[in-house]
Length: 169
Image (cartoon, rainbow, N blue to C red; front, side):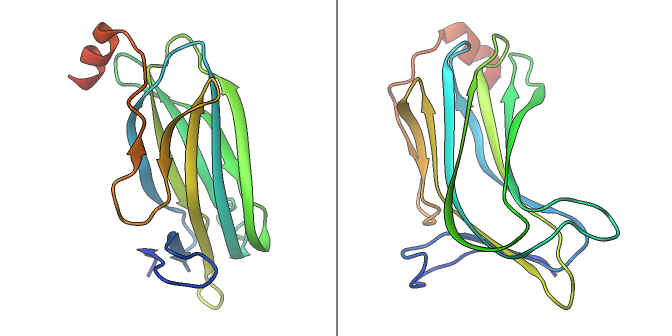
């Protein structure tokens, strides 16, 4: 059975991180950011630290390894994948991953999902996610260290009130 938990008080990820263990042939996911308002046309940078053990591309389902998915949300609420930050196959220690894009004109918000790739019953995949940060034009607008406390959402976001009201309806 897949396990999605906070990994508290370990020496390698103190004080905590998001730990996902998966021995199934399917991916499991956890929505890290549900509605983060952004400004169209701005530069977006997403960074996250990750660690993996036994990450694979499943031999039967061909589902890929662990990653984070960043989706754009338009005014109507439709989702569109902007990019994935894909973790490597195998076992690796804490590594920082980073992606930069320009926010397209129709995107007013983001959704970020952590996804644990498939594993095997005899050797489950284990993925840790930590220190998710989102920058808009190099200004930090979101930070989450997965410590089971509320993430920090920087209030200095400037957007049009009409777009925000339409999105939140």
